[in-house]
Image (tube, rainbow, N blue to C red; front, side, top):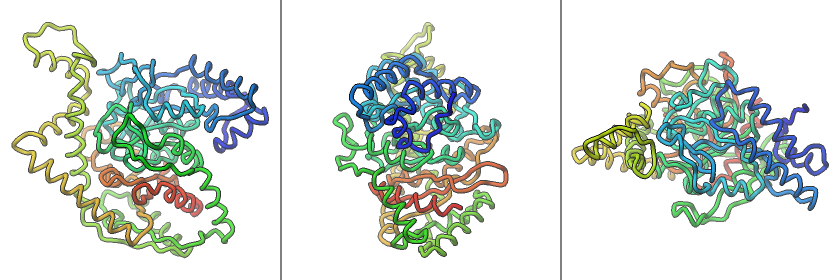
Amino acid sequence: MVLFEYESIAAYHKELKNGSTTCSAVVEFYLQQITQNRHLNAFVEVFEQSAREEANRLDKQIAETGHLLPLHGVVVGIKDVLCYKGFRTSASSRMLENFIAPYTASAVQKLLNAGAIIIGTLNCDEFAMGSSNENSCYGPTLNALDNNRVPGGSSGGSAVAVQAKLCMVTLGTDTGGSVRQPADFCGIIGLKPTYGRISRYGLIAYASSFDQIGILANNLHDIGLILETIAGADEFDSTVADRPVPPYSSNLSGFDSDISNNGGKSREPLKFAYFKEAVEHPSLDPEIKASLLNYFDRLRNEGHTVTAVDFTYLDYIVPTYYILTTAEASSNLSRFDGVRYGRREDVKVDDLAEFYAHNRSAGFGSEVKRRIMLGSFVLSAGYYDAYFTKAQQVRRELYNQTQLIFKDFDVILSPTAPTTAFRFGEKTDDPIEMYLGDIYTVFANLTGIPAISLPIFWHSNGMPYGLQAMTNRFEELSLLKVSELLVHYKN
């Protein structure tokens, strides 16, 4: 079979138009890829029949009209926390192992409306709680580059599906880095848009004021095309922004021309900032630190400004994030009690509390239980003001400081993660060490700004690692344009 490894969706569509391939042939290729790489455990469920049926329908549409939809025949995988009507959506948890979605998430519906083919649901940490994909009830997803290492989490399955070419693009979710960190570990691109840029309707909630649907792909043009398709207002979500959605993908090619027509430099020098405390943090791998500093020098040599700024709040970011997200998780997950939905144990009990305890003990894994307990603690009467209220105040201060930084700078740069992909079991016995691995990614979620992880570097241990770039709220177009520049300078 001919390999269908297209550089971009645009290249794929070119072949569809000239008859060099068909949607059905491409779906068969990816189904074969998924079967051959089943050991990676990236997919929870593969929708073979519906994918084939949709491919046939789209092929007939091309034959009859010659017209292609914006995502005509694009094969997409979705994280197992996004509802797709008629299909199982389990959040990779025993609690929801038999739940069939009664409706489709708005982001997924927009993909379908644009002609995409949903090929299956992707493995993740249970209820999106984790940084390694070791917390799934279906077992861990393996990093395709080194099967002994984690793919990152919680969107590990989404990252590996792109990394191993099991589909073209995927949707993940990012509560504190769960798109960017696995993208970093797998050597692909991961975008977390501004909070409110994409509707969260149909997304099983972890922490509602942090959760954001994100996109994983191998190139920026595809990221932009998916983003412009699924972003925008939604009558089912009161938290989504009612703002016009720019044509992200069509704007990127113009920026490429600006670079190539100016000797590899953008027309206007950019002002980059990075947190001095982030680069000097003891948890950062020395090789990653050296690469970043050399890369910053490269940017300076190309005419840009790269400035270290003091950011004394860095050590408060992770505690603030986990206090607030576990509090929200404790509230959001209280609905899973086995009464209306969720796992129900067949046991005789004397009272309702015991009934709940049996169901929730059997349905939730250890990491979810840990976060529910922590969230219940920080919301309790004796500790609410000391922890939850104080964390909210820190979050507001972080936002204010971020706005001050963006008055003087265009982009904030940082590592995506302090290390490359670690080995399975390496951090499972120390939850605090695992949580501290989020030190560079949770900042964007606390402040609601867009962030992207770009595959720029390779470590001496043979694993990739990336550069994280962040812009101000709703400046995804600027972020994608800058990303083209940053990727251009990686060699």
